[in-house]
Length: 467
Ligand code: AMP
Image (tube, rainbow, N blue to C red; front, top):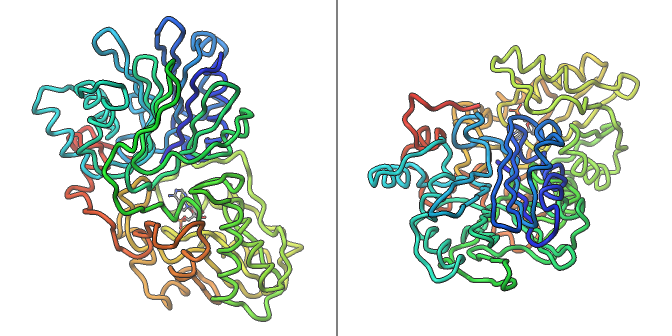
């Protein structure tokens, strides 16, 4: 999963992009990068592993001049976590440049890469996104948008793209619309971002979503829109609203805070916890849902778990013992609120179950008498091939255990998940326009024939590695 941000037509576009990336940090913490293009057409890139705040010193920023910039925060789902896979990609082709930032996962990346390699293309990364750069370099077209449209025909899966092609900034969204992308105005300029919270930080006003299948181009000739790709069923990712996006964002035309509260209210209706004394969230992604649960159930909302904000997802522990220790480093219970209480703990999702298990033992050790776990989404039973980093089915705990086994394994007094229909009823726009494959196992498209190779970006397994 990743965050993308772009600016056209505002001086110091790179400085704005850096600000925008701060607001998209939650979408990826492995690496960050900016490509800027100055008034003479010179493109420069700066990329670094780690957080946005660590990546760009004054010296780097001073080099990134000009009125055009795109940026990227990365959380790897295809290709290893390594500097050669940091984006935006910047390629020099026929005396000009192609820069590209991608959010999503291509489902035919292995085939695309093989075809290009057979034609002599050389790849410098293991990212699926690099295949798109090669295709743009080879594509014909009377305009930049036509060229990108031609390059994208035959590319399958999830993508939101920001491309800079010879002085034109292009924004493209796949015809299924899995990932979010919005555009806004800043003076006479244009700003593009994965989420609207990144428009807010630069003072841009939200104009609209880039539509599924649409390519928007902005350059000296103005803004143009092209419904470039054949229409397809809409499959917005429900997990963006459940977990991934920030609650202060508008995603798929609706407020994430509003939908999370609705998820919480629906959860209280479907899975009540009669007689409980307090309800609390696993902060921060569940705060809004827990508020919704408290509101609908009438149970008092408390801040019974405190999160250390200096521990990010980069704090990776490969072993199970390490993961439990990680829970302790990240969360601490407020004993005074928990002692002797029957508590409802709300989280947005359970993936491997390690977080829940660790938290339940922390909460019990702090004196809770009963722990009732409530989850504001359905059980995750299938991997995602469209850009969310979910592990293989064997590691998804809800795919491996019955409800009773889960209750025992997690150590809870009761466990309640939201139904898929309940989850969809809380979403903005019509419920049948969402992808819920990770919850239902119903994939809206063909799934990759070689998923492990796909996770490695289609590169030979010897060079592959996932974070
Ligand atoms: P787990 O310990 O594997 O069950 O992780 C569940 C926790 O991770 C929940 O608190 C979620 O908020 C969070 N989470 C869910 N999906 C993801 C994801 N794709 N990447 C990182 N964290 C996630």
